Picture 1 (spheres, rainbow, N blue to C red):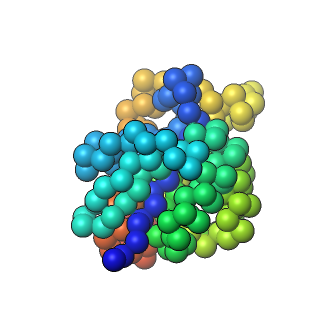
Picture 2: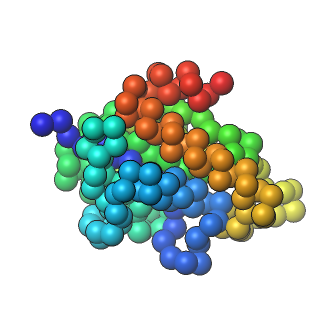
Length: 189
């Protein structure tokens, strides 16, 4: 039997962080959960997880509960437990270097300035897994980056980011169904 596709959105647990810029990865996982009827209720491997199918592929929807900067602890536990090959791990997270709501798919590479991704790469000791980044725009000059990523979207921004999160969910499904190259062609334009 073919193994799981691990779809992991990065974010921070708890009501305090809901709807913040740093939690668009969690938001994307929530969209996939609704679209495909996969309940994310089980607490395992320091994460909330849901087990189900997307396009006839077995998937695990994952929301690490370790807080962003320690996301790698949870991801490593899951990858080791399910013996997941790197190409079957897809990470979804926010990116301050992309315009609001834009998405970018990559086959692998560095973490850039993202501490959650730095943690994942450090714990896996690899960076060769697909990722879907969702643009949250740069912080205003006067604002600290940490305060910015933990802030909530304005109403106008929320409309744009909701569209971006829906596109990110669609991109994840495309990666599962047709591969990373197809998804990059379709969504990186």
